[in-house]
Image (cartoon, rainbow, N blue to C red; front, side):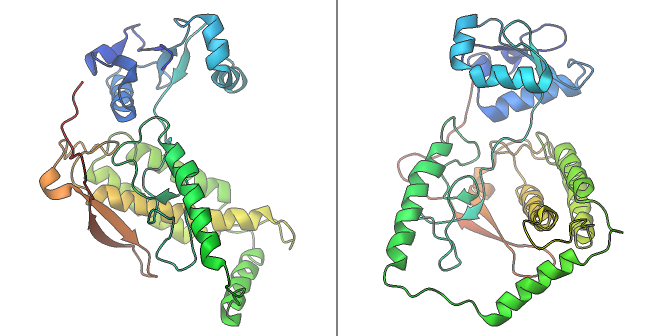
Length: 315
């Protein structure tokens, strides 16, 4: 919001073609699609990017308001953004879905609370507004903590079942005892990121989404035998990485399945095979539940509307 310009390789300020009334201040999904369109139609730079030109902003304002971005540009791209444009492209920024909770952060699992970006109390809809993540963290983080504290007053400490503890110990021991013949954690993570970026990104369609789902399912199987080098029992980062990899792949599967299920375009979900919004059929939440089966179960819940109903968004 400081006044930077987006430019393609031809030097054109291309947002004029997509959102002439808002330009670079259009919502994130509109700007992301504009950037990706410029790249895919050959008006991007050879490295698959467009340019963000912050030099049009007075230097003192850049240093005052964008100090962190100045440091990021210098440290990671070797670019002084106060004197030259920096190359950028769309990327994952925020998860608008997440673990379904009520307004006190309670999940369907008794005693388990979720707040922040991992949770979905449904304050974003199809697109997150700037600074709206503060609601996730500050407001509902506070509510979750207060409600959890109230709930445990007078409760005795829980005693986990011995069978559950034994099962978790066996899981960890199984990971540590693996040989080194499986794929590396970093390899599977990289392949997961590559397919999600290619097929579940700004523009989506049935073919690419189905391909992504097939790859993710294969990676889930490969993750079960991932190689672990560290055989220690203290602060074992390899074990942590193996567990996190499984969880990341589960999340990837849910994201892809939700995108396949929603046969319309809404906010950050843009299906080239269903390019319009369809309130008659899809003004509803998609819920995915993991119950131990091969694939998550899909269900729906209604959208709660009070003062305002969804309207057409125009620029």
